Image 1 (spheres, rainbow, N blue to C red):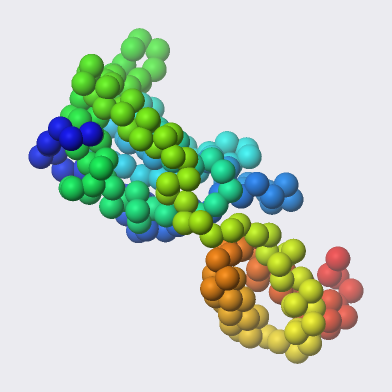
Image 2 (image 1 turned 60 degrees about the horizontal axis):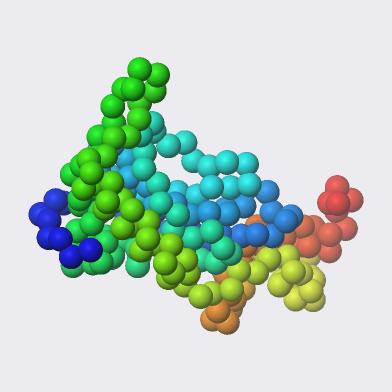
Length: 206
């Protein structure tokens, strides 16, 4: 991956904002993210999208994809973006893919076409990403919020809290989890509201 290139790469979405993606294997979570993909659309734009238990984000015809991670964990999109920037280990080889990638009508569908050099570069990126599947994971443990919080929340909540107080508590517990190397998955706010409403004796709460 040492071939130099002046091609400018463009990133968007989660990759541009540095929004970290959490991959989750908890069986009770609907639409959980299972796999993070690096994508390249026909206009030369890179992003990160996720596949869930029921599929994934719509991708335009001819989009190229590479698997970044498919094990539970938090994907560090900042690190991936940095590696795509000039000087990063993926920049020059990604530029070769962009330079040799086109989307053409094959008589039935719009399909990706790669020049021989772009095909080689595509495979180099694939080898780089698959060589260490955990290289873009932050190392924080993914934990179900219900299992981690339920007992503590039941002890602390009185039923008198308003929604603003629950929002503050949710942020506080998330920060505590992060301090302990944990990223919570599941809807913390819904969990807290459910516990609060039970404390209030709301008969409509299951």
